[in-house]
Image (tube, rainbow, N blue to C red):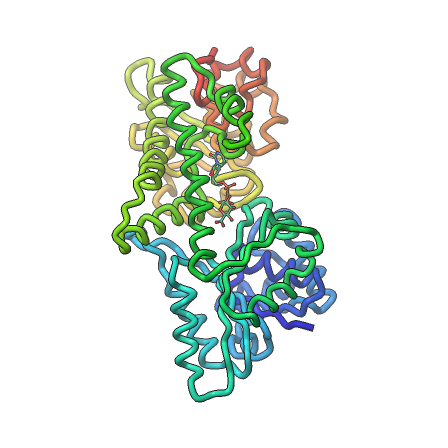
Length: 445
Ligand code: UGA
């Protein structure tokens, strides 16, 4: 039986470790955060992700999943080690590889046999090759070998467990037969399920991850720009997306106009690939445009709110209720959420802001200290809407479908609803009570 080590218990590491343990592998996950490890060993997930806590608890119960802060123990007890630490963006947009190198150094220090080392984190092209070189040097004069592979993760937050259990594809970049064989063993279930596999070299595998995320970001920015234009010319963006998506070569996915993409992946990865391009003398104009369009989208949304409700020429004295803080539903993640920019924009123009989010409020109170005292956190949708001049729906949480429009409208000062996700675009009822503004069409009323 293969022993698996996972370095880093963020979204990727934790879900990956839990899923592999459910396949019967003995998995040890390592993190430097002692408190987090203690809670994990008790079966508590540090993140909100459907199905994850159950999987963790089942692994712990069966004894196939353990958590530790001891790097030496993980390195020495594992046949394959997945590096799944964060690679956040630096000020200049490049990926910060500090945590990756800390882990690689520990692997080099404690390695006690032949191991397969897998880059699971999103790493700029060339990183896995550098890891291979570094470990090769460290192991000179020893009988041990470190076989390096790149195996990017494509899971989506909010669907992390189901995406991991049935991925769209498994990409493996490796030069050695040892690494390929090890990963075929680890992913035997996916091979049996006929999940598509792509075997390639380290650099290509790393690029596939950035290329995929950047392409999706480009798609979103493209449709968002057309949404702005549609509002001016009387077209309907949802029908445009449907019409475009009928062509298999385009596909209808990721053509949902909105307030701009957010999250820990697209904003960071688009910047990182532009940075890699620059360092290699190649300007990535298309990705740069997608980043710029995303920034534009957020500020256009603020202007749209301002224009619609500043009947006396100003947002001062207006109260705006924000529904949803997370960058998407079914997660508690607020990193790079467009809600942040829109709240800041509205506050900057003098509006008072109340917020409610089913999952993101604890995180917002902790991670957005600059907003503390400037926004009012509310216990539910109704409390948030009370005495407000407008509701701005930022995240398409399913529970918003359950609210009574009449009740909301009656408690408000003015009845204006900005639906940044077109969640209620097909809903006649909301229009009975609200002046309704979708994204990408003029049909408010
Ligand atoms: C993204 C990718 O979809 C995953 O394949 C990838 O593994 C992951 O990044 C990663 O690199 O770890 P994620 O960030 O969880 O996943 O979220 P998405 O569902 O892709 O959404 C990203 C943002 O785009 C959200 O703010 C979402 O609201 C927005 N979006 C998405 C739109 O505005 N319109 C769309 O049509 C789709």
